[in-house]
Length: 284
Ligand SMILES: [Fe+2]
Image (cartoon, rainbow, N blue to C red; front, side):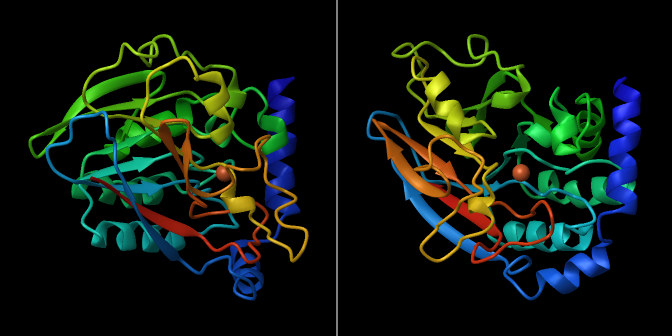
């Protein structure tokens, strides 16, 4: 049954959806491929930070006919120019299959060549509701792509890393909608965390409500694409999150921080008043 759905999904994408040239022409009429940058400063009053750490937060590349690899490469090169100490990518590397594996792998490999690079999966990277999202049924394809690219994907796991002489705990959860999330093995209970900051990658910002009782200081998310389409008076009617306060930007949430980037790519080929975004976060 799964293979029939997979085949049907592949046919839909390859024979009905516009090709990348058409997407580019349409997209250039809007803000689909206009890269923007936001820089934010974040402090953790209760944590030990010996020196500032520059985190490049990228998300939602969505390699597909709507998002050519040349555009993803451009965004990655712009991000690397910012000289980050650490790079975090919060999922949705592809929209669906097929994609040009080797070419994409070489582009992604630019990131770990520049700075330690970590990621988490998004809902398009392999999950059990993939027929709706036209993505993979399992995580092996994107998982292998990340391994071959030298990106350390954190799937319900965390580790301490050292940047300069600063230690940071970096954690990654499975996507909220993919039903594979295991917070107990990823994060300490609330109040039991280390003195160093815990930076958590979780694709969907709605994840926050499931992890209230665990220790983390900054959650990095994508998924929303900033709403992808912003309309006058109507706002962002298509933002795929329950809590509409967390569609984009840096927000405080009780005594912690959540940063939602608009990400690089898109689905369906159009962003309106909602351009792609490279995010540089300075932990101070
Ligand atoms: Fe996405």
